[in-house]
Length: 312
Ligand code: SF4
Ligand SMILES: [Zn+2]
Image (tube, rainbow, N blue to C red; front, side, top):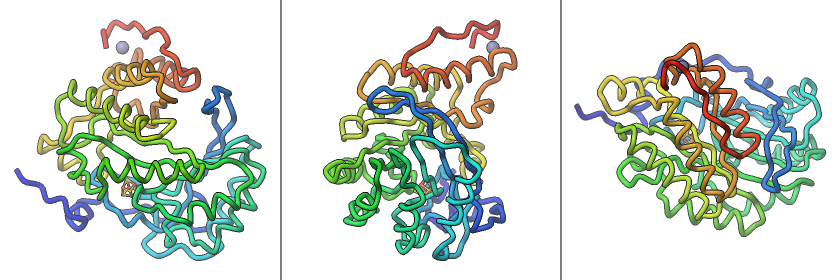
């Protein structure tokens, strides 16, 4: 069966969006993360509510917590203030906006000054952004910050047949050029890499291409990679799953690729553990295995595997 992958077709499969308040971030959390110098630091992450990303990637479900209308001026600083009042102090701040920090309809440029003022006590600032949205505004925002700056970008996969089908509108070449530009203006890059993107349905090939993508990202100039197990649930992914174009990753595959990526020693590698329970079939070892991956994120080393009667 042929499945259409235009923006319109992808959107037509969507379940309804959540109803959002533009003056309250949809989530915020406090965690620890190892920095590029090997030091463990505390991190506050704020998931901002804003206008939906203009790209419509096949695997994306971030639109659920976004609005259709442009974000009004002042809303983002209010959200940051709201979250910071509830969060403990931290060294690093991540401002993740379910899209692109440098999309002016999501984060109005007129708010940059107020945002930078609110986060002036942070040593390091991380935002997420699309590789196409690269220009002098990155430097302008960086210059408003007291701390160092990092941009997280989705490379997703370097598989030549799969990347175009993700509808992300990027090439590996564009990712490389954007990373070089960002590095040249003194900003770090971390890459998001998918394990089991749609259209790659062999588990062994998925591990291989995920690892290749991590290698590519480091070679392009990223100094951290986050491996994200691809999930269904956004409508089109469920359709692709029932049509045989997507298989969910197993927890064993995630463990394997994470271990192999750590062995590269090419930069920090993180494994996204959100909703990881979905990928495990075993009630006995699930929590321990998740715990192990969390510890490996913090230590950046392979820890002894969890033995279980399920034999994985
Ligand atoms: S660019 Fe990012 S936020 Fe936008 S649709 Fe793609 S994955 Fe989602
Ligand atoms: Zn088990």
